[in-house]
Amino acid sequence: MSELFKLQVTVNGEVYEREVEPRLLLSDFLRHELGLTGTHVGCEHGVCGACTVLLDGEAVRACLMFAPQVHGREVVTVEGLGTIAEMHPLQQAFQEAHGLQCGFCTPGFLTSLIPFLEENPDPSEEEIREAISGNLCRCTGYVHIVEAVKLAAEKMSAT
Amino acid sequence: MKPPPFEYYAPASLEEALALMAEHGWDAKPLAGGQSLIPMMNFRLAQPEVLVDLNGVAGLGYIRPADDGGVLIGAMTRHKTVQQDSLIAERAPLLHEAMPKIATQQIRNRGTFGGSLAHADPAAELVSVSVVLDGRMRLQSAQGERWVAASDFFVSLFTTALEPEELLVEVHLPPAPARAGWSLQEVARRPHDFALMGVAAVVGLDEDGKCDFVRLSYLSAGDRPMEGQKAAAALVGEKPSAEAIRAAAEAGATLDIEPSDDIHATAEFRRHLANVLTRRALEEAFERAAG
Ligand SMILES: Cc1cc2nc3c(=O)[nH]c(=O)nc-3n(C[C@H](O)[C@H](O)[C@H](O)COP(=O)(O)OP(=O)(O)OC[C@H]3O[C@@H](n4cnc5c(N)ncnc54)[C@H](O)[C@@H]3O)c2cc1C
Ligand code: FES
Ligand code: FES
Image (cartoon, rainbow over all chains, first blue to last red; front, top):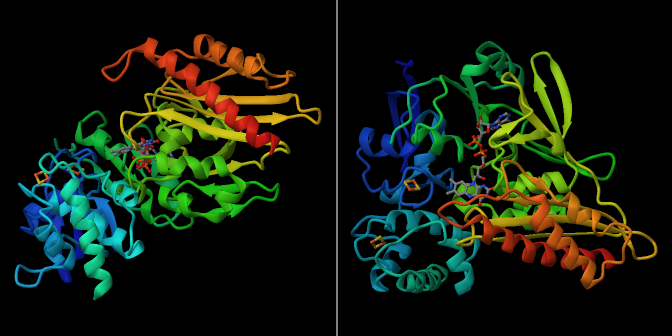
């Protein structure tokens, strides 16, 4: 077996230290080592987007990174966006506009959209569809997701 | 699936990385953005014993003006950075236009310029774009360095001129000649997917408005970027009339490519696409060249 890697990483504002096998995927590290099961695993080859997390503020595929690669860095998962009592405006918008059904894809949509809405506070429908093109949803048909993003943009610029 | 075990090294300098490559040679793979290598490891199509992670190596990610008026791009420059860079937009507009076609934003946040070239997938935009832009790759090992022209760098499917202990460190793109135009045309099942067929083109006109040179490279048309030499021969020295362009597209689609059947498209359909896309690419490129 390969040597264990001593990893220190900040996840959702909390510092964690673990010893991991280098081959451990970031997605499995978050789910199995830290118990943060909001990050979902659909395909493990970068296509579905369910595993998307924020790495130093950028949306990346957690299934296409090894855990040691986030040593010393900052990760935010869907659990870090808001709480049930105090949801992020983007989460509220998904709830109000019916932007989800089963919810499997939702964490990846939310994490992908956070940096997008920061860079594009007033996006067009075309820009929204482009921004979500890396996330698959098998339930909604995307129409309500696009509506939710429009609503979120309104909410976020109002605050 | 899960990747097989490997030894992991995260060197901080190029010297260290090259020393690791020299020591581990055939058993080692450099890890750049991981957006092609990690899926292959998850599928266990790749099982390297050693990974040399280049992400912490200082000084490999940059875009700089070259003395000849072209640009120099460090191997670890992320797709996102290339996409947003104003020097690239100005000096290599074909490359600028290609970037949003590569995967989706989350992939472009990690994937690198050098990784895409070293991976040598004949469906990759950057592979054909670097060929028609007459790019040159700087390869380095613990022994020294050498430059290889893009047209010699891509050998066959996922195979380049890189020796096992070498790293691709930099790519040089020369400035565009006078009266040159460019185009990138492709058809994919969905935007951001790998192209079913595509073609990158750079053309130049002489002072009389005749075709001076044509460089074409096809994506997804064989085991490497397929250069459109027969198509070019049909045009050079001619006025780029609609007829001449049609003849060149026909020659390219029948003689220059070796597409195959897969679940996405038949070879015949790919040849049809190549014909249509070559015509569109040449029309747009000559229009731009005429300025
Ligand atoms: C869902 C999805 C869709 C995609 N769609 C497209 C697309 O439409 N078009 C497209 O072109 N690409 C696409 N890609 C691939 C993407 O562009 C990758 O980023 C790229 O192919 C590889 O770059 P990387 O930096 O991620 O390299 P890695 O995956 O890290 O490495 C790829 C290979 O190159 C070797 N290597 C890397 N860097 C060096 C170096 N400096 N010297 C020597 N060898 C090196 C590695 O050992 C490995 O064998 C897609 C990827 C995914 C996951
Ligand atoms: S699980 Fe990572 S993209 Fe599908
Ligand atoms: S809500 Fe079910 S997959 Fe998107």
